[in-house]
Amino acid sequence: MPSLKQYWNEPFRFSGETTVLWSGTYLEKPALTLASSLFYPEGGGQLGDRGEIRFGAETRQVMDTQSDEQGSMVVLLDQPFTQDLTNQLVRVMVDEEWRRRQMAQHTGQDLLSRLLHDAYNAKTVSA
Image (cartoon, rainbow, N blue to C red; front, side):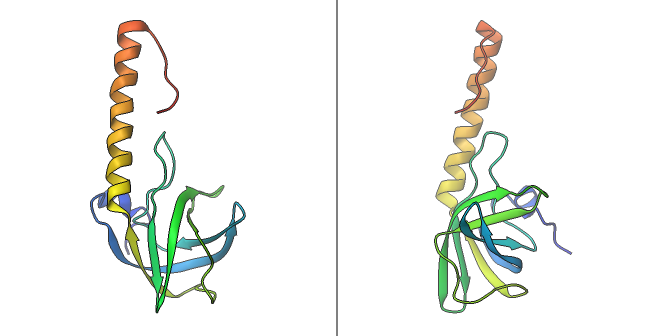
């Protein structure tokens, strides 16, 4: 069985297939929960992934990825699919440019925060 958090094991894999576990709304946006996720959720100072999800002839933009209160990865979409996708196989594509840019900015912020802390005992809270 694949890991739910595929982004940990395969951070440079940007496409694949997975099953939809839940379809509905989250934070007042159309949303899906996936059986396994290549999408990195917002957390630890890094923004969540963006990308696309395809089902048949329909493509929806992933506008954000969050962890809900139970720790499930939730992808927020630009618009809902025309049918409930629960238990359906979908194709996912992570926006590689977005992911790499967020990784670089997050790493840069970590380095800057350490430098400011060590040199000036200053604290940073966000990039």
